[in-house]
Structure formats: C-alpha cells, structure tokens
Image (cartoon, rainbow, N blue to C red; front, top):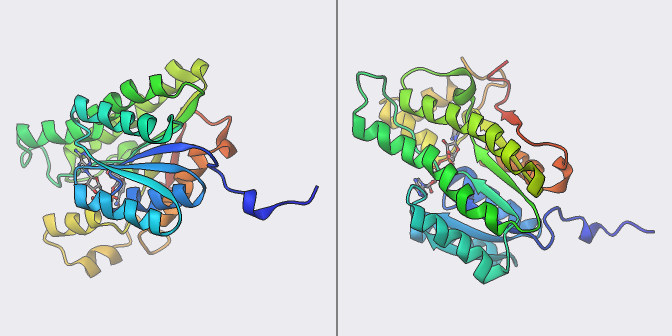
Length: 258
Ligand code: NAI
C-alpha cells in the first residue's frame, strides 16, 4: 500500500520519562520524543524549567506533564514513574539524562562534592530503573547518559569520570538483567555539547566561552555538538529502530574518541 508519511512517527502511543528535561540535552530530547508521538513526563529539579518544557510541547500539539523531582531521592523517582502511569497509562521509554559535573581533581574535590556527583549521576540511574522496570509491563527501552569521559577519562573532573564510567557499565548489567522482560538498556555518550552545563564548566575553569568552544583538542570536527544531535541518537536507541541493540555504548562526539 501507499506509504503514509504522517504515520511515520517513531514513538507512536509510547509514554516516555526524561529526567533533567528542563535544560540542554534533556529538553531537546523531550521535544523530539513528543514530536515523534510520545507522551512525555519531564522530570527535573528545576520545576519552572520542567514546566516550561512541558508547555513548549503542549503548544506544539504534543502531550507532556512536568514533575519537580530530585532523581537522587528514591521517593521522587517513584513519584516520576507514578506520574507516567497515572497520567498516560503506562511507561515504555526512560531517558536517564539528569547529571551534574564538578570540574576538579582529587585535591580539589571535597567528600561532599564527590558524594553529590555520585548520587545525582549514578544512584539516580539505579533508583529510576528500580521503579521504572516494574512499570514497563509491555517491555521498553532505557537510555542512560554516559559521556565520552566515562569511556576514556578526562582531566580535572575526577568524580564525574568515575560516575560516568559507572553509568556505562551499569548499563550493560541492566541490559543483561532485564533482557528477558523485553527491556533494552543502552548508554548514549556525548562529547562536548553546547548546553548550559558546558557553559558552566567553562565558568568553573574560568575560561572564556568562545576560547573554550574553539579548543579543538578533542574535536576533529572543530565544533561542539548541539543538544538536538544528541537527541536524535537517543531517539534511535529509544525506538524500535534499535530493536536488537542492548547493552551498547553509543558514542556521539564528533570524533572526539577517535
Ligand atoms: P544541563 O545542565 O543543561 O541540564 C541538566 C538538567 O539536569 C538540568 O535541567 C538540571 O536542573 C537537571 N538536574 C540536575 N540535577 C538533578 C537532580 N538531582 N534531579 C533532577 N534533575 C536534575 O546539562 P546537559 O549538558 O544537557 O547534560 C545532560 C546530561 O548529558 C548529563 O548527564 C551530562 O553529564 C551529560 N553530558 C553532557 C555533555 C555536554 O557537553 N553538555 C557531554 C557528555 C555528557
């Protein structure tokens, strides 16, 4: 029969949770998921930011609800999953994207900073999966955000590098544990991406943004990525195009690891 282009959305009738959906990569992915037919729960510590992302989706004709949540806290993670089930009737896609970075080496990192980075970047993935997996009763796809630095390491971000390496390997463990339940689990590993986080890093290093962005050491393509370029890779992993992809670490970094 004739191809109906309007039916060619990749997340038709799916319900997705995006953590850290108020800003940067999470916001771009929430918008793309909604354009591809998903109902989206935008979860973020930044409540007004999450509400604004949900409003943008609604104004574009999509379905979204905002939840203010700290994903390092178990009750908040449970509440985010409940919002998906109660509002949209189920859960199929989880994008564990919320994360923080502290630009410091071992000498410059306090125990409190170490613990916060590990809680927000690593414990959150465990807790969100703990509550989301039982809600994915018809199978699903989980995408965790690692980083190029979770694979190769990097300077002056010790806690962050540890946390992102943990995310990459937890992803493989989760993929094995939940494969029989029809749940795929993959990590997306961005290189430098132009978001508020990266601009804040430049500030933490007291570097001018333009000079920071122009530093080509890790960038054969001579530029940082855009949040939308990461979002399209997340969409691939989230949807049925990746039906035989699980436990993998997809690198989206303009050749930075090459
Ligand atoms: P961003 O700072 O623009 O957005 C992160 C969002 O997470 C913010 O809205 C923030 O409020 C939220 N968040 C932080 N802590 C939270 C918590 N405890 N509970 C709920 N929400 C929380 O950052 P960006 O750049 O969009 O980063 C998204 C993910 O991508 C992070 O995991 C980051 O580590 C990762 N990443 C980013 C790269 C970059 O160059 N921007 C490179 C590699 C990885």
